[in-house]
Length: 212
Image 1 (cartoon, rainbow, N blue to C red):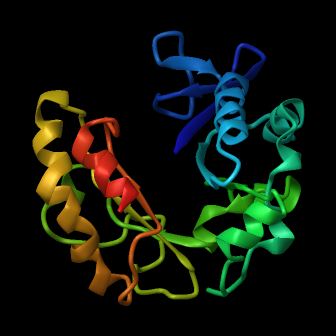
Image 2: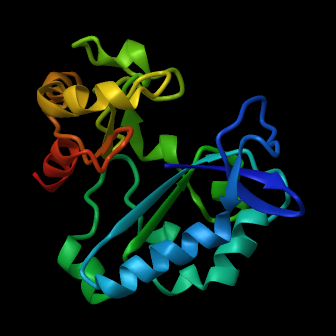
Image 3: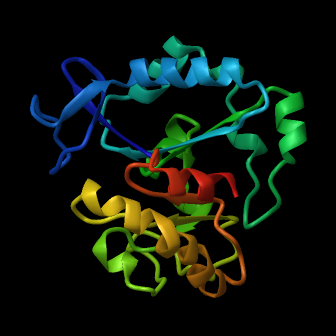
């Protein structure tokens, strides 16, 4: 899950507000992170990577140009191969065999038509993020369809605080985190999460949950 913005004549990752990136909220050019992802995928040829963009880029074809510079098209799953209306996704083995191992989704609806980048809310549901999503209840965030909408084939479970607190993460990324997919199972039409979003994912218990 990456936040993308126009900044300094390029596309940057930034955790900001108001649709604007600033010097004090910037992280790095998006291309740098894509190169890290490329290196990971090269070292791990059987892994499939999903990028979900909170997308504030206004430059026409801005994201497309970054992905072309990065040569992501070589491994990118094309929009035409993504299932509509809750259909089945290709099997992992087939994606690996065809080296189509990178999925990219955007929060910008128009870019599905203009840039061929999948609009996330056509394909997935998400529960509420932040403190409200950590109270042993599972309900959709505002932009998402209701969690039981099976015309969206992917389920993402958020489990992180509104304001990250690293000292509490060891506790929160343990039993409570492990329970959250179970809490959301019934709400999502008896579906297990495809993705779990956390803060400080390197805390040992959250790594174990990812592997499970």
